[in-house]
Length: 152
Image (cartoon, rainbow, N blue to C red):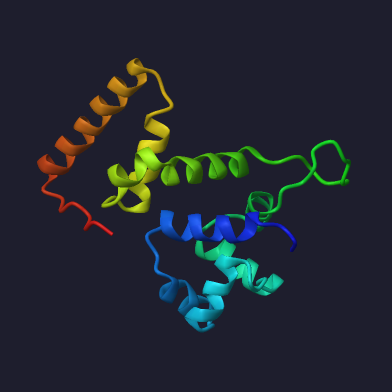
């Protein structure tokens, strides 16, 4: 791939999920240096590796490919347009990697980052409703004596 987008998005996805290069390399069954070369653009991952990466990040292969390949929208490729989830993933990565958000999100897990990403996109009225809903759910856990799930 002649495209500079792949290395950038691989790094953004890894950081957004709080993974180290060692962890991703281990998951892929390659040495860390090989994975590092994927993020710097010195090597291009195989199609099998790209498929594994989509699985690691819990993204459909279609959305993953639309995220890492920049197509000229004026040319007809005989392929469906970007899906909403692919566009949302791209927006989420931009949000997580924005300079203003890096410090704020540093100690949050992926689910907490995702929650904030969507929470910031809704109206103040909807935010109030969601907070009330969370309070109700929290009280329900306390009343039933359920143990809260451990933080990932």
